[in-house]
Length: 408
Image (tube, rainbow, N blue to C red; front, side, top):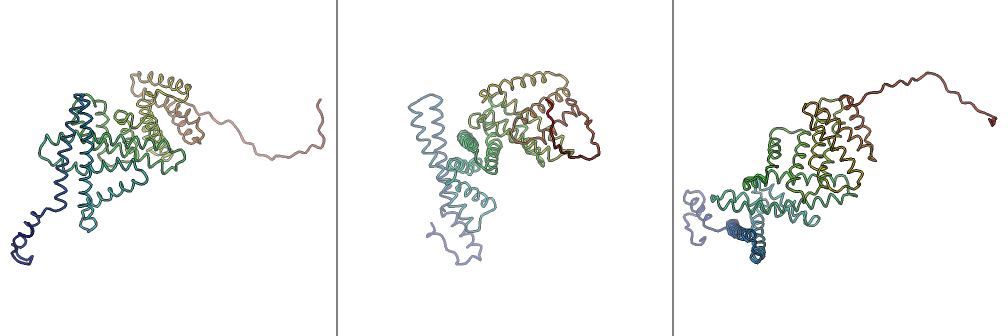
C-alpha cells in the first residue's frame, strides 16, 4: 500500500500533500495497530473459552471441564502475551523517544517496578504482572459498544482478579508470619502492601462484582462499602486514614477469610490499635486527643466483634476463658437502652481490659497506661488517691558503731 500511494508533491507545505500523508498513515498497518487487532482476537477467543468452561463447571461435566480448563489456560496465556507485546512495542518506544504522555510514563514506571520484583519476590511478581496487564486492557473493553460482550468479559475479569488478589494477600500473610528477624521498615512495607491490595480490590474490582451479583450474597458488605465510599470525599487526616484501614479490614473478613487468615488480620488490627495509642500520646492535652480516644474504642470494638469473637483456636486455654468473661460483660453492656450510658460502660470495659493486656507485655507501656487511667478517672471508673506523704527539711548523720552488743 505504501508503494502504491499517490505522490502529489515532495513537500509538506500543500494541503494535498498533508492529506496524502494522513491517508497513507491510516492505510499502513503499524505494529501498534497489529497488536490492537491481535489483542481483540485473543480477547474474544478468551471470553468464548471461559464461557464454555464455566458452562461445563455448572453442568458438572468432568470430561469437558478438564479439557476446557486446559484450553482456557492456554488462551489466557496468549492473551496476556499480546497485551505485554503491545506495551513494549507502543508505550516503551514512546517513553524512549520522549513522545510519551505523563499517563504513559507512569504506566511504564509501574511496569518496570513490577518487573523488578521478578528476582526478589517471584510470587508477588507473577500475580502483580497479570493484574497490571488485565487492568491495561480493561479500559479498551469498557469502550466496546456491545453490552453482552462487556458483561461476559466482566465475569471473566472479576473471577480472575479474585484469584490474583487472593494470591497476593496469601503471599503477604506468609511474609508477615516470617518477620520475626526482620527490620521494622520491612514489616511496615508488608502492612502497607496488605492495605493497598485491599483498597485496590475494594475500589476497582468490588463495584463490578456488586453489579454482576444482584443477590443477597454481599448484603453484609454493602453497608461497610458505603462507609468506605463516604471516606473518599474531602481532605483526610490521620484519624480518617486509620478509620479507612479499619473498614478495609472489616470487609476483608467477609471477602478474604482464607487468603488473609485470622492470624494475619489480627496483626493488622493490633498495628492500627498501636498507632492510635501512639497518637493519643502525641496529642497529649490537645482537643484532638478525645477524637483519638473515640477512634481507639471503635477499633477495639471492631477487633473484638469481627475477629476475636470468631476465634476458635487459642494458644492458651486460660486466655480463651479470660476472653469469654470479657465478651459476656460486653454483651451485657450492649443490652443497656440508654445509648450514652452504654457508650460510657463500653469505654470503661475496653480501657480496663487494654490496661490488663498491656501490663502483661515485656515492653514499657507505662505512659499510655497512665493516660488510660486518667481517662477512667474522667469517666468515674477510678479515683485519684491524694498523696499524703510529707518531706521534712534536715540533715542525715552517718553513725559508726565500733562495738556491736549481742542482744541475746
